[in-house]
Image (cartoon, rainbow, N blue to C red; front, side):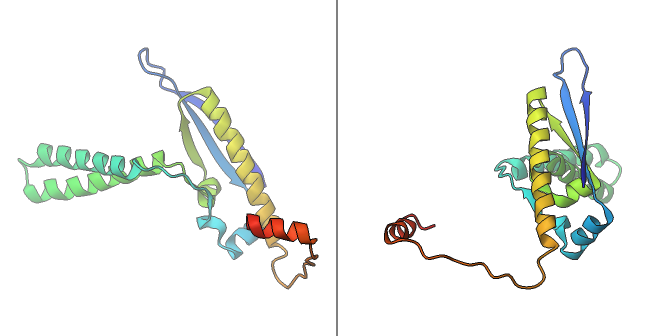
Length: 171
C-alpha cells in the first residue's frame, strides 16, 4: 500500500488569499485490493467529522442557484426554469457538500480526493492525519487477513485490588 500525496497552490490573485490543495490517493497491491473488495471497505469511514452547519450551508447554496436559474430563465419557460433550477441547485448543493465535508471514506482515498487548506500549516496537519489514518487502514487490512477461524485469548485473573479498580473505572 502506498499513499500518494500531491501539493499545489491556487488563487494567486492580488487581493485573494492563497488556497493550498492536497490531493491524496491510496494505491493497493493485488492482495490488498482483494481484501478491500471482500470486506467492502470502500464505504468505511476513516475520519468522522461533525460539521453542524455544513448541511444548512449546502442547502443555502442549492437554494441560491435555484433562485438564480429561475429568475434568469423565467421569461422563457416556467417549466424549463423550474427544471434547470432544481437540477442546477441540487448539483451545486451536492458539490458544495462533497467539497466541504471533512469526513473521509476509504473510497475517497481509493479514487483520490482533493482537500483545500487555508494555510500551509493546515496542509501539513492534513497530510500527517492522512498518513496516520492510512497506516491505521493498513493495520486493519493486515488483521483482516486472519479474520477467518477462531482465536483463544487467555484472560488472567486480577488481584483483589486490581479487580476493584477495574470495576470502578469500568474498563
